[in-house]
Length: 102
Image 1: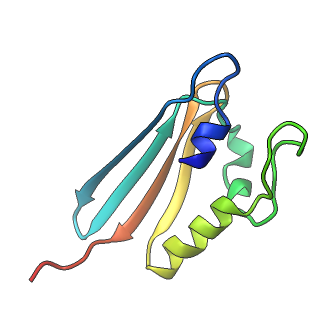
Image 2: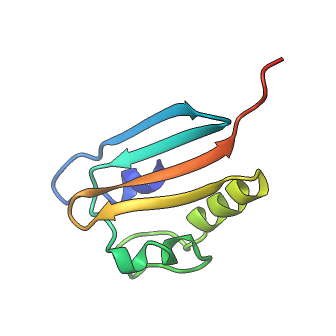
Image 3: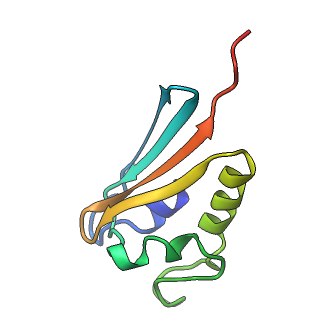
């Protein structure tokens, strides 16, 4: 959510939408924004530690946030990925095993 607020389109207020749905034995979380978007060739790179797509003078941060999210998702048996188009925003997906109901 923080990245959705940080990387919003210039001159427009940030918009972030969070949703979740049960999909079989998994919970599918989605965080969608209307920000600057990410080019397809960088979709995997944003989840690597210390990998920044923008200069520090443009956007603050150290390039750790999404790498930490990936580690957490994988530790719990899930995964994380992004769908994005430059200039049209991004949707980050997190798929995690659901908690069995008694």
